[in-house]
Image (cartoon, rainbow, N blue to C red; front, top):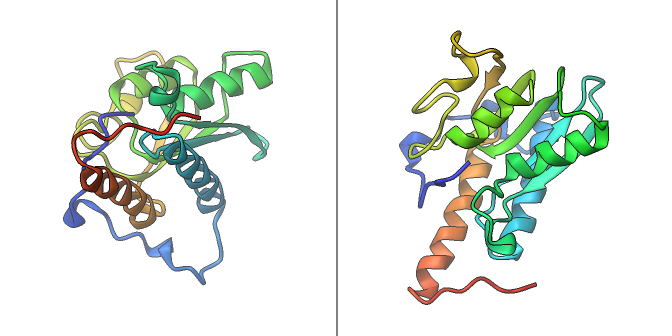
Length: 185
């Protein structure tokens, strides 16, 4: 899911008609709001604020994940990977057929590959990632017919809100200066 944008450009953010606070929440928005909660929790530990949740085929919440790279000192601890591991444990099966991943930032190549391997059915993301987006922006890994599995992709859900979380985080980091050190739990 990395490299997250330092500051997504306003023109890179699609206008999401469902960003209106008074509009009724769709299923995708409801789960993406849960992912935003995970993103906020990641920021509290000094990680880039990216969150993910996975819904099972029955539409019930199956797992939550957040960036944990700083917390765990693990370069693979992206929100999607955290959520995939939790979902596989919850199902006692790494095959996540019929499941949907909701994530605040478009998945990177590593995460998109993991989603293919997990047999995820659908990916819904908030804002695009112009530097590493691998399901729409730079690559279309989940829709490549040469792969053994493909998944449906929907981007731009709550895009403005998701991008704003990242912008605030990186603005605070820049204000903190070059010696920024994430808080330790």
